[in-house]
Length: 151
Image (cartoon, rainbow, N blue to C red; front, top):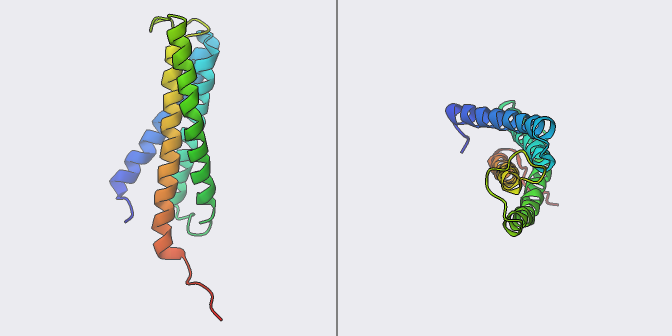
């Protein structure tokens, strides 16, 4: 079942917000606070939020009916990055615990708790990419798949 117009507006608004906040984090942590780990993960989060936004906009344009096979690539990309974020989250959390960091050293070059937040945000957007591409793929399965070729 296709999402309603209100649901699609909400999805697009959330993806735009995620992309903007990720870009802000990239510049704030990179240039201002010199926390390069958080800046990098904020940038990656912005990229994945932008890809999710692209996915929604192309659905609104009904582009996936013509390029149905591309949804599989987005699904695989989301799944692989989602799996990659899990050990990264564990590493940053372990480093923060082992180094006895407080939650507040945002501006230090190694504020690992803040980096954990941005790794989680990247995991969330890659999960959204996986789920939405899978959802749109199933939606177009019913409408655009041709019957199998028989002799």
